[in-house]
Length: 118
Image (cartoon, rainbow, N blue to C red; front, side, top):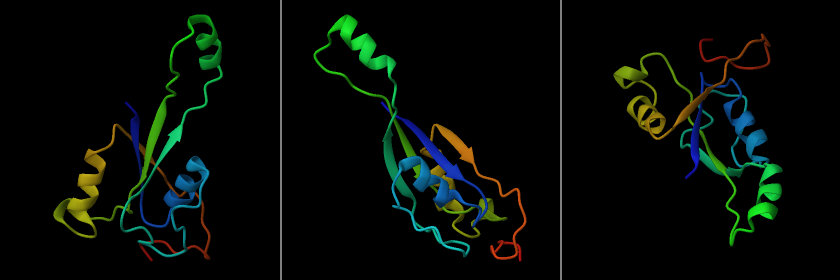
């Protein structure tokens, strides 16, 4: 069983960029405009744990099953989503599928990056 992590935040804060970095793929489009992601991007990432090999040598299992994390890049949340605005209920349905939420927050100013409230 895998841990399901949903990546959330306002539109255009870097969720898809973080998703691509965590998954080591360029699967999610990461563009400079809000709502670049409409459908969630998902990927399974194997957890690299060097202790697993040591334990396997001690126990000699028939099979080694590595832990995984399912990352989901969820479309940006907008004000009023709980009332159905933006992707509204679809966003909330995507969140329900997650065990943990990774909230991405933009903590810098840059006039070249479009902000959802502008």
